[in-house]
Image 1: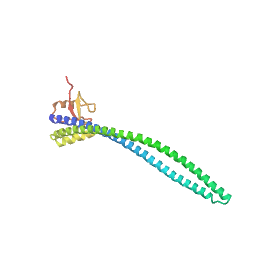
Image 2 (image 1 turned 90 degrees about the vertical axis):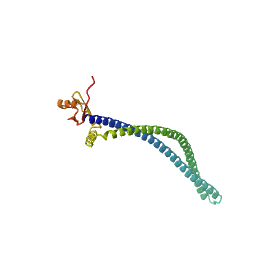
Image 3 (image 1 turned 45 degrees about the vertical axis):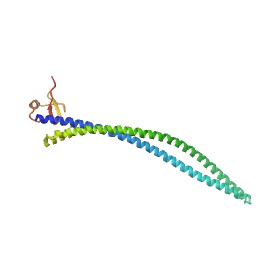
Image 4 (image 1 turned 60 degrees about the vertical axis):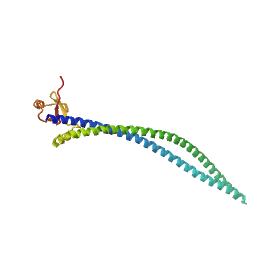
Length: 237
């Protein structure tokens, strides 16, 4: 029985180490995901800016088309004035030309504003592209480092799993089932140290007779309070 208890203790040490390593891996995966999400967000912002530039350029093109139409209307109206015979018609055409010129002037002003807006947005886009290129390089490096750490931890986990398998070969299935159930119920701690009459798993006082039975080491004893398997560990000297 003493040998089995020693093996269970080794098994718990391995399992706790594996738990810790997996937690480290999960943390690294979270960091890796955060790094990648930062790059995704930066790319989306760059794409949104490019889309905005395309939209403003489209609006400028449409305004240029309207301006060309107004200018053509002005030319036609001015040409038509030469054929007008009455003062009333002349005044009407004059008002049309004035309105068209006003509209053309407004369109020219709007087009100039669009040109300035496009230049500003392109300047932002150039800066954003440079930042994005730097971020992509930085992300690739940091991601590579995180993946290397994850891989190194996995090697340690694999080594522990191999040791674990070797130990479990020599333990009865019923005992492993009990151990696994206790680990699930007690946050990974299926075994607890008994010392000075106390269970250090739940810090409860153990019945004297039960505690004394631990010294014989001929049976597997559980704490009556937390049900963990007790391992006697006396303080040195």
